[in-house]
Length: 117
Length: 249
Picture 1 (cartoon, one colour):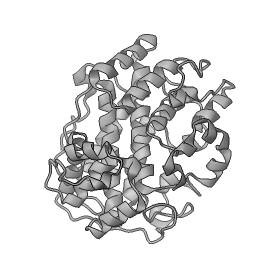
Picture 2 (cartoon, helix red, strand yellow):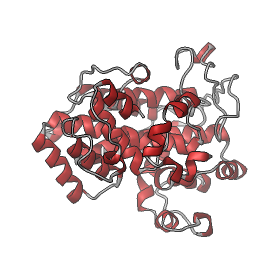
Picture 3 (cartoon, chains in turn red, yellow):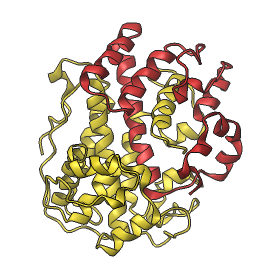
Picture 4 (cartoon, chains in turn purple, orange):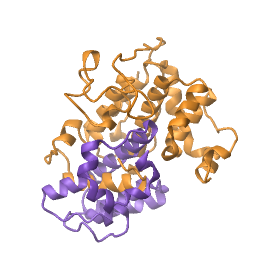
């Protein structure tokens, strides 16, 4: 949802297929989108260093060490956030849920049983 | 306590100084007595969070359709009570299948609701710092030694109530009194989630500010940061990690 808000703010497209992992070509209007998504996915999957380093180096080659640091920090942050939400069973805030109906459908969140608890 | 934790220069790698500073602040907090745990217990929780992915029982449960049907003993690296080891490992390895009845069962086995909240706060904050290191190809930072032998404060905010999730938390407009620094006016559920232990919120929110952005910047859709990534680029990373973790939030 923050992604949708953010890219809409920038008036870029916001095809959510990149986020669900279904396409690496989506969100092309955002620089480095494919490299960032691939690095983020490798972190979330907890790939071994051999695999993770490939995506880290690919991102660094396409950008800079600073970008790698900032991307790693954001990914690490969200490895925590999901665990806070799931450990405490918080529901999506009502205004967010109303706003995010389209994003909700695009990300196929109804397939997640936890989305209804 | 040593002030040489998170000395990234020693690894010949350039990392924003605010990250090292906030991690050092958190390490100091971790090394001191908390709300429901002593300093030694808090550090043990951190150590156990690091052991979770190497636990054979957790691996078998993660791969099972019904994790509760798999019995056994966790591969623990501390002398924490089994109920605490169970909770720490679950939060790290299989958090998506934590339910209200699971949290109730922990309580019935001796882990109070408030202690569970502090345990979650430590587990996930240490995990997020460790994940940053792993993402960068860095070794994990050595855990601190206890800095005191004080008893936990056992502080409980009087305005905490049930009704939002599995645990009591401050109402959205409940950041008042001793908790007035937690947020202004109203806030999102994720910000409230650990507020039964206010210091747990203070600690993870401070780390989040350096790893991602402040709660204020999130709420106001701030677009300008002292970062190499744009807001949209940050959200791509955030959304891909969240999507992989089936995080609907």
